[in-house]
Image (cartoon, rainbow, N blue to C red; front, side, top):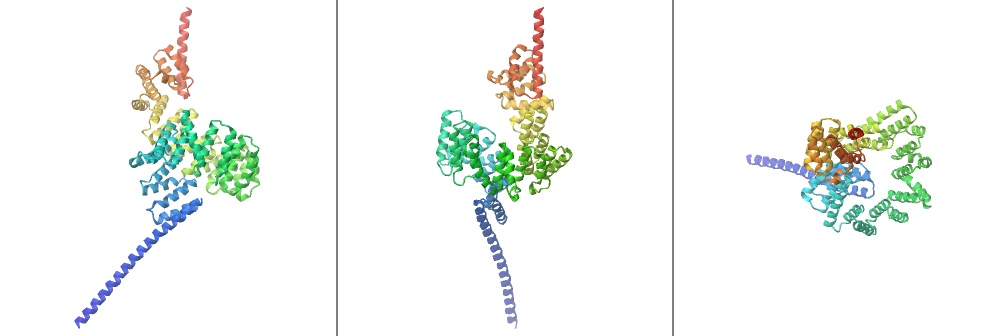
Length: 579
């Protein structure tokens, strides 16, 4: 009896364990199956997203690839598609997605270049340079590394440095025609005749390559315009460019512009063709209307738009271009009608700004200020909105409003550098030393090692007598790092002069070459220092040379005072001579 019970008990135990094991196995199989399904689904969605991207359906490509990335966040392929689709659609989130792709595959040169390219497009030099520095740790000296360095140099308008890096990239990868194209384009600006001729020959060769013909032709056209080549040759190049298979609308617009410049009889017929085709795509219609505005054809643009269906002219970005058309001809009543009862959806902040412009034009200043406040408040929450609003009002001569927007934009990390540099240029054009000083204080926080920023901050600090001891410290640091730079030497010399060390100031200036002292900006300060030391006759020439410089108001005051002292000395000497 016991044996039978034991057997039954063991059978139950075995059965229970078997059921438990089977259940656990089922869970494992289900989990593995679901995990496998997610992986498969992610791959499937990634392939579908790639197909959407190939068809230029950027919205579908981005949405599909985002879902694929959610299912499998360890694979960079989906992130790359989102990044590329966003970049091609003009979406500012592209940089974030390229970063995600690079984080997943740190050694990828293509992802590195994409991060740098996107960062430069948004003016984020800090991100671009940090990415390049990290890239150099494992790819320094490679062709992609030099290509990235060249892009940064170009963005900083350092043409010689860019050309040097493109040359190294082309040498390291002689079969990569993209580097050949970039090198040739960079060398078009060379003063060396043989280098320039070589660049033109390279572009002519690439012109006959199916893949590289479009960028090569564009480079030849831009160079031809800059160097005033035969207009008929430019016409032929532009005609060839716009006739290439799949030529973008921008290339056709370029051909139209050249026909207009040449007063070519074909201009009208080509414009008519584009007017018939442009309404099919809002971006192309906006491009055509914008071109009309810039070429004093705003009335024509308005008449053309009036003949189009309402659902065509209300699609973004057409409304804002039409608003600009009315603004250019000062038809404030029409602009007010266009913007008062409309709905620009995600761009309501732009509508409020355009409505404010119309109301200001009609003399309704209180209402205009209210509309503008709505626009600025709506845009202040996102850097992209602020950038868009700044671009919209850039030709309105609303300087105070633009300045406020730029300062607001400078609070966003991704736009800080771009905004501050724009502010710097704006204050420099206005000869506003206090504004420059304010910007420089922010710039040195952003990059404490920028030697040019340190020098300019030292200069403005001393001119305004704002934290002069700090300014003198910066001036000395900069001079010690690069004593041969005449501008740095001049700032340091003036810092010594500002605390009464005339001997030390002139000693620093005496180390500069004759050619350096003849630079107007340097001459102005040298003349001032010489007058301070009582060397009036020697100062005369440099003060006259300094008048050619673009001086800040405080510098002009110093120069005028020095000239006044020289005249007083001359008058005193003349009086003595007459006696």
